[in-house]
Image 1 (cartoon, rainbow, N blue to C red):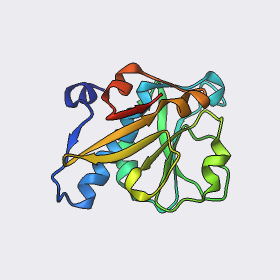
Image 2 (cartoon, rainbow, N blue to C red):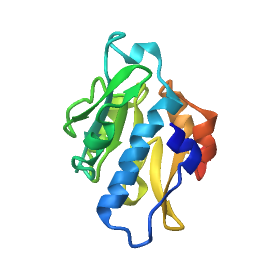
Image 3 (cartoon, rainbow, N blue to C red):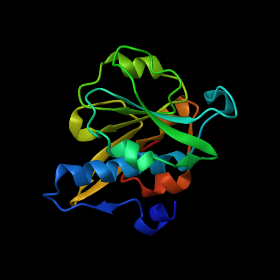
Image 4 (cartoon, rainbow, N blue to C red):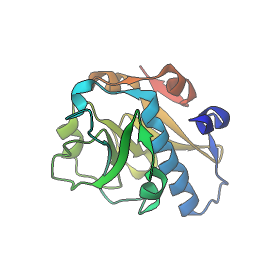
Length: 168
């Protein structure tokens, strides 16, 4: 979490950055978003349930996200990564990362549920709560706070303040 505060959540990436660096930056963001979001207690099956990050669509992260998440915890819950099919309901997910070309129905399946959705704006995925964008050679993000509130999620004002755009 100290990395977030000192970096301002604006990881520098040269304009011609190799794809693996950008993947690592986005994977780091995904794992660092979690402490800045409050999920309702009902989002977890039990007090021992893990914090689940799910991936759908064409996975742009490969093993990078698994490596970044390894050993991390969110409020005492072990962070785990799971890949879910485009057509299968992504039950038990707390963060759903939409890869390129996900099924149009996947967002409909989690609508109103406490699932934080994350996508890359450049991948042509619309409707996610957090969207990665490139700005001045850096990986940044936009937040649809209205969509998050509709899903019973509360995003910290600290995270909202670091976004390049917030839809309230």
